[in-house]
Length: 393
Ligand SMILES: Cc1cc2nc3c(=O)[nH]c(=O)nc-3n(C[C@H](O)[C@H](O)[C@H](O)COP(=O)(O)O)c2cc1C
Image (cartoon, rainbow, N blue to C red; front, top):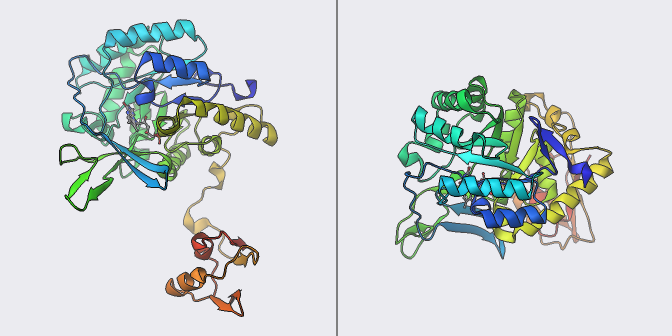
């Protein structure tokens, strides 16, 4: 679909869907399969110096489910287990087989200038199209002083970006952590240090749950656990907020991610600033094949809206984000109850009564709205089990 073509910093993407750095990009054979199925590119599982110890825990995943559906996913996984030579061979092989697919080398190293610069020089001419600096892994690596231990400090993030930019010969994206008070502060620091682009978000630091029989936290690793990284559908609102804040304060290209599971999630990310998007958890749960509905859905949407490329969708919603004080507050909306869908369970009446306004009542088998009491908060529409309430002017 030519309508999906886009370019960022001179890198041509046949479509704006990339695999994020994670298990789906951990081995060459699987990236090969993903490319054959239609992914526009891949950010390789984070590559580190060969002598950096990387021992995995078992288990390393926990999930928050609604029925069979995985809504949120936590991992305590470390980084790539391939050697640098295996990556160099793999990138070259993939580039030869798929010259139009974008490969971004995600890298991480101890906080030593020579170590970062050595990684960059090693991959400069590997065939990779760009670097993504992993300053944001929230587990395991911070204990070694890297990952999120870098990305939560503006000065350190800027310093390492400068080291990388001194020797990088391809564009450098910095992957930011949502686990900070102000993501814009870190973004500004790396932008001032010369970063060519931003990537956000990495996973959200989390604790999935506790087994109340044994008091073991999840995921269980021989009875113990550690704080992990949360991803999947549940983190989309956090990722969307972070990307929107980055775009409000920066013109740099953004690789947007966090909870993208459909083409429309991707489109939303673009409207708040993402140039292209990355997907991880959705692929871990449903496989590479999801790319088909993502490309088809986004292509059809762009055509329907009269856009010629994903670039024309970029930033479309940014002007509609305002400070709370500047929201128009003289307009009131009211619940409109679809009598055919409503089963008169009274839940909306109870919740409204217990949540301040007591504006709803069940009278003669019908939900009545007292317009003098209703303030149009919309809570009733969210709790209705039949989706029978919509808010109207
Ligand atoms: C199991 C797992 C491993 C991951 N490993 C990496 C990694 O090596 N490097 C990295 O930058 N991000 C890593 N991530 C984070 C993802 O690239 C992505 O930023 C995050 O999962 C949010 O996207 P999603 O909601 O689509 O999964 C990992 C995520 C998961 C779930």
